[in-house]
Amino acid sequence: MINKCLFPVAGYGTRFLPATKAMAKEMLPIVQKPLVQYGVEEAVEAGLTDIAFVTGRGKRAIEDHFDRSYELEHQIAGTGKEAALSGIRSLIDQCTFSYTRQRHMAGLGNAILTGKTLIGDEAFGVVLADDLCFGHHKGVLQQMVTLYRQFRCSIVAIEEVPEDETHKYGVIAGDSMGDRIYRVNNMVEKPAPGDAPSNLAIIGRYILTPDIFEILENTPPGKNGEVQITDALLEQARTGCVIAYKFDGRRFDCGSVDGFVAATNYCYQNCYLPNAG
Ligand code: UTP
Image (cartoon, rainbow, N blue to C red; front, side, top):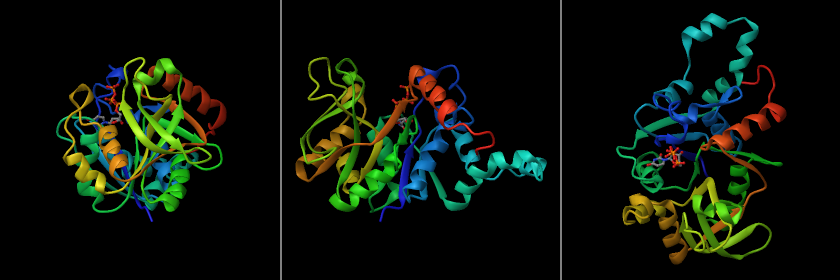
């Protein structure tokens, strides 16, 4: 069973400056809900209710969001506005939330390693909340948890991207193991044009087995001088097994302005319900 989900939210979100100067990128709303709430809802749908955040300076609004707000709640008690908080209240009731801080923005791999203290020695999910995912029938993380039961190894979610966009992602190569599933045999972080081993890009959903921490401890800084989770996963693939899973659903890169606007339009048309918390 997987119970824990790690949310690395320590990044600076520079593509959204000045909005992110004093506010966490993960608190930007898609219509009426912050990005991070969509991510936690996806984790809970997959049965992952121990929510662990790797935060940084300027991210306290995330902690406040996943806590009661007595003054506000008292103010709107008994009015029609109360329903707007029902979704977040339900998450607060179902989940435990824990926090640790990444000292330096030393890369996603370093952020995940920082979360070791909150995860311990068990398999766990990772959600990058700026990748907003909508599964067709089940949430993307839930699809991955089902796959984990079968393979018992680390799993990365992938999607096909145009060749001129592979340089933005970690890109895998692998042997097809049937519908949507590959056994990874190569991974390159943000490949230069022409160096991408495929057009299968890793997106912000992972299930990781706990041996990843020891591998990360021994992973030197890679691309851009940052500790890359892709480098650690490649090591894990070489010595064991890593599965790449072409998820069934849609993803929006809400870390970019274009993706954020597309997600907003999509949600406004497909998910927006007045008072949906
Ligand atoms: P990104 O590179 O997309 O996020 O990292 P960023 O750095 O915040 O964004 P820009 O490029 O400056 O606009 C992917 C995810 O990894 C987390 C980020 O918070 C984001 O969710 N991250 C990245 C960390 O927590 N720590 C890091 O050192 C790096």
